[in-house]
Amino acid sequence: MTVTATEPIPMVLAEVQVASVQRLSPSFVRLELAAPELAEVGLPDGSDGPWWDQRFKLVVPHAGGGLGSVTDADASWLGTWLERPVEERGHMRTYTVRELRGSGEQRRLVVDIVLHEGVSGPGSDWALAAEVGTRAVVLLPKRGLPFGGIEFLPRPEQRLLLVGDETAVPAICAILEHLPADAKGAAFLEVPYSADVQEVSAPAGVEVTWLARGAQEHGAALTAAVTAHLGGAVVALEIPEEVDPELWETPQWSSSGEEINDDGSVRGDLYAWIAGEAGVVTGLRRHLVKERGMDRRQVAFMGYWRRGVSMKS
Ligand SMILES: Cc1cc2nc3c(=O)[nH]c(=O)nc-3n(C[C@H](O)[C@H](O)[C@H](O)COP(=O)(O)OP(=O)(O)OC[C@H]3O[C@@H](n4cnc5c(N)ncnc54)[C@H](O)[C@@H]3O)c2cc1C
Image 1 (cartoon, rainbow, N blue to C red):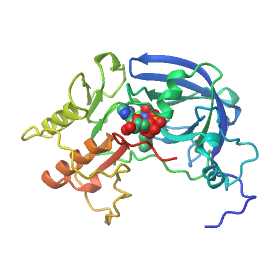
Image 2: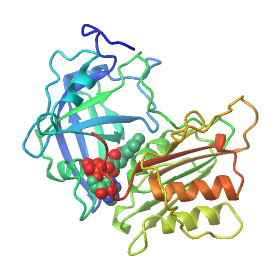
Image 3: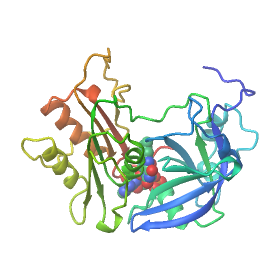
């Protein structure tokens, strides 16, 4: 599609400032981001949530301070932004809307960012150094306009299986907090340390299990717990040699180009939502779909990051 320079940008694009910083635990920092434009953030149906696993883009400045301007941005903004040197435009990363607080121009976007110990990345480094007044840019859905970015789409009668590492904790917690009171299922969350376990409210019928990784390999505890939960033999973590760092296989979309035949026929009573390190998620996908024969239309498998790979742009 050709975009003319005068078309308005179909989303909220705003420079935000950090309004508060809360170090939740060793691996998480919670930031409240503020800008008058956040008043316009809303879902395509015009509502203000629930946001489930809504993702958004955060642009953090380059180490030298460069953060592209958003003044007078139109629909061509992203293309123009990408053409600029990274030193001038900063780095774009994907995060989850943990919560939107307040209303009008006092609206605050809450984001929980993982501080990945020992491995530098612009997003994590920025969050670690953030203080009140620190600047960034956000791209978020504008009320009433199509946007995408919510993958959590179970049918009301389906039992839930929510699985994720620390990067998926914000999404799983936001999902758990908004489930209907009669929801049934289980959630497994793997975090680096026991001190990273968070208080989260969930319906009585959804069992929430936190797994502290400690010295174990990333994903080992999660894989064992999920396979045990599904019955049969407990399976050890196995990361395939080839991993797509952008693994994204949902009932609606396939990053590998797999044909999706969603004809609306019955898909079983379980809906699984699985996100985290792409190698771990690929291993779980192979096991659940190939070995346990789960219908892939019942599962959303999402690589939120890949060990050793920096996010694009
Ligand atoms: C839909 C979606 C929602 C997401 N929501 C959140 C969220 O709410 N909070 C959140 O913290 N993350 C979230 N993530 C993950 C986040 O985008 C990635 O972790 C991202 O790589 C962080 O960028 P960075 O600049 O810190 O590191 P990058 O520059 O991307 O990577 C630099 C190095 O750090 C490593 N790395 C990246 N992330 C981690 C990690 N978590 N642990 C260990 N090493 C890591 C990479 O493998 C690479 O070697 C989400 C991702 C997606 C796709």
